[in-house]
Length: 138
Image (cartoon, rainbow, N blue to C red; front, side, top):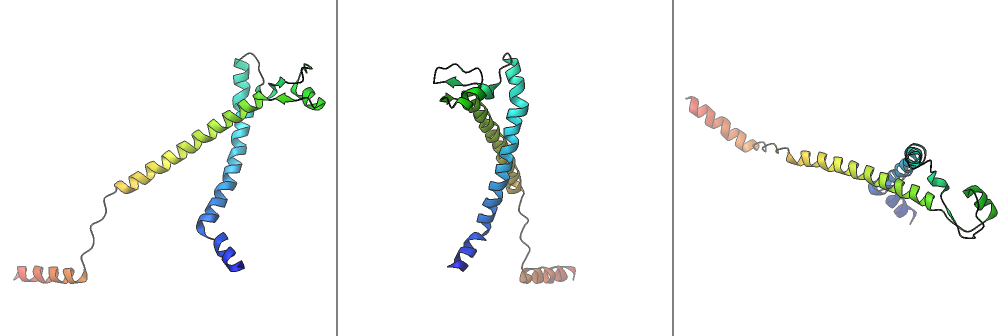
C-alpha cells in the first residue's frame, strides 16, 4: 500500500499540480498586494478619498466611526469594502490567467501549423533510387 501511494504521489500530473498550486498561492499574494497597495488607493482618491478596506455597515446600530473600533467592540458588521477588494483581486487574477492561457494556445497553434517534414524513404526505397540513378547514367 505504501508503494502504491508513493507511485501515486510521484506521478507527473500530481507533482505538476502541486507546483501549480504553490505558484498560484504566491501569485495570489502578489495580486492581493497589487490591488490593496497600488490599485485601490488611486481609485479611492479619485472617488473622494474613500478607503475601500474601511467601508462597512454596522448592524448593531451603534454608529462606530471606524472599522477598527467596530471590530474591537465585537459589533456585527458587513464589510463590503473588503468584499470589493476581493472581487477586484479575482478579476485581476482571472484576467492574468486568461492572458497566460491565450498565449499558450497561440504557441500551441503555431506548433500545429508547422508543416510536417516528409517522411524519409525506407532503406529499400533509398537503395532502389540509387540503382535507378546508376542505370540512368549508363
